[in-house]
Amino acid sequence: MTLATESSFRILPRLTDANRHFWQGGEQGELVFLRCRACGYYIHPPQPVCPIDFGKDLAPEAVSGRGTVATFTVNHQPWIPGMALPYVIALVDIEEQPGLRLQTNIVGCEPEQVRIGMPVEVVFEHREDRHGDVWIPLFQPHGGGDGGQ
Amino acid sequence: MAASDRYIEKRAAFTGVGQSDVARRLGRDPLELTLDACLAAIADAGLEPKDIDGLATYPGGMAPARGFSGGGAYEVIDALRLNVGWYDGGLETSGQLGSVIKACLAVGAGLCNHVVCFRSVWEGSAQGSGGRAAVGMGNEAAAGEFYATGGMQWSLPFGSASAACWIAMYAQAHMHRYGTTEEQMAQIALNARRNAALNPKAIYRDPLTMDDYMASRMITSPFRLFDCDIPCDGATAMVVSRAEHAGSLRKPPIHVEAVGAAMHDRPSWDQLRELTRMCSHDAAEQMWSRTDLRPADVQIAELYDGFSYLTMNWLEALGLCPIGESGPFIEGGGRIAREGVLPVNTHGGQLSAGRLHGYGFLHEACVQLWGEGGARQVARPLEVAVAAAGGGNTCGCLLLTKGV
Image (cartoon, rainbow over all chains, first blue to last red; front, top):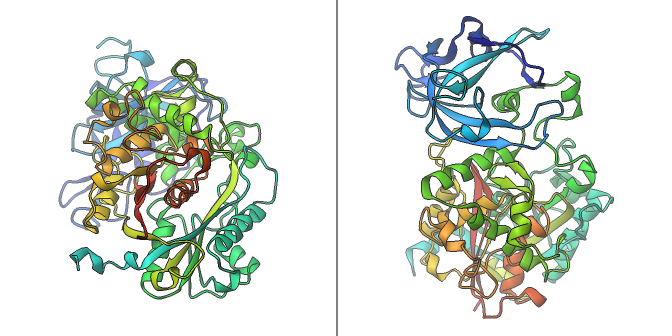
């Protein structure tokens, strides 16, 4: 699922060969991490060598996109001009591997409905950019974005 | 001789401290503030600049980043015409006090005899009236000319643009796991303000009540305005001397009993394995492994409060209260008050005395051990203090004892 681009401003990541799989995986609706082909370890953030077996046979691979909210904060401070307030920043643990965690926003429910341990699923926000479009992975309550769980 | 006597930081002592003027905004040359602090510390030790043969600072010279550094190692070495046997300035270390820990090791190793250590900020002036700065971005962001790169690409696109957001998530996890309450956390801010009232250099000295705290605006839950420290201008310095050269100076030396610099987790704000733990626990564990003293011996604790929760985290990390129980420990504020069993942040912390960024805690630990705290001096005689700074993956701590 791809969200319509919202009017709220976002600082975008600058695409590189090292991060393209992550920021453009959403074009196919997929949350993609680098993975070690030898030992199967998902690596985030991406790096040139597997931190477990130190091999270099790494390739991007999609995960389910399901996870749980490890923790979160409801931000009310306008750190970034143009970004609509408030918004929920969260750390989400991805179900495929203990400790496979990313920072993200929780969308599709009211901020006060967000809870630690809440099951969530990825949803992508498409952003056009002259250096290459990106798909920002956000998370909504599992089973739908209407705040119902 | 105890086994722990072999550690070389025990050959280091604090012999002088100094601080520039401190204010929300001074509008003065940051290097002037830096030199004011360094010269004050050197004079406090009874030394002259020509006696100083080492220098350590955090974060060192860097491109202007909203007032984050008021002078680098090279600038100060040159301005004071120092001839150094060792020097160091850098950001990638065990918190702001990592620089002081390195100085202790350098004098212990015999590379130098008297090291001036400093931390200088001018964030108040640099940020002006534009509000607290976000990390890693400037005004160009709104114009669409700014991209999140490097490590910041994993947080900035989500509006996670401040350590306030990152650390708030740890506070939230602590509340969820242990039932810690906002009213408990408030005591860090209220205690700081009570102490600041007696510190003539503190920035905010007016009384702060629980009602004021709860009514203050939410920044990023669970952090309200008063959970966040105050950007300011000011520099703090101290002299670390080799022990055999420390005894004959102006003041009784404050001995470095042990240091903690460990990091057993990923160097990241969002990839730490346990969200109710930080590398403060690793640094503290290392520190206690290097001394025969125990947490119960600590008489005052000067613990980083860039955000209120970090002080609670340090209380637990250092074993000053059980893991998960910092909330009940600080409840009501009595235990951590100046007259309590464990006075904490007796100068007002960064929450009320200003964001002098780590060094203010070590400065205050020395001031209290020397009995120079004036109206805010803890009444009972002090022999053992702990100073700790940082959070997340960048944490360092020192255990200090007054010479007897």
